[in-house]
Length: 113
Length: 111
Image (cartoon, rainbow over all chains, first blue to last red; front, side):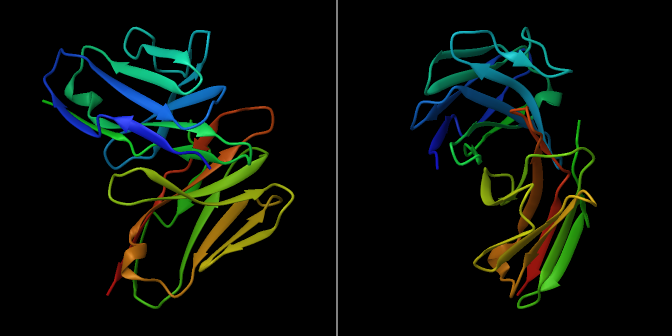
């Protein structure tokens, strides 16, 4: 298994500002994933973060809006930039384990006013 | 894009009853995972079933996989109020590291 922590657990932000979410894993992993879950919806993959290279973004998500850092094999950050109320969501990071299971962090609940 | 489709979208049962949720997907997969999410919190991994497996059990949970029909089901037996949550299936295709989620089933177990 993997133990994943995220900071902050929740935040309320003003539109036009940015928030950086941190994700820490208790073991070294090649890939880390960032998901968004809009209210009442399922999870949508934002991007895949690899250590030492730029993140790979899914269709509909761009680096200017969701810049990602991956400075080492246990840590990643996702920034939600120039926020609007439509960015209000739960943001989750995840990793694969050697048992082919994907584990998720507890999520960051973001509300944009 | 969403590959999995769960049904029903919502299910309300009494404590002690069994709950069955279904998941269908569109392309061939490497494995399928079921998750539980309590009221907007993080996802809890329940069961992984691989494409060469047909059935797996974990406590009160039973998962089946029919690759010919591209479908899976999650059965929760003797449900409890604490089982109230949203349940999601997610599929992983061979050669891909991405996990694609279904829309989820919201289960309510009434005491």
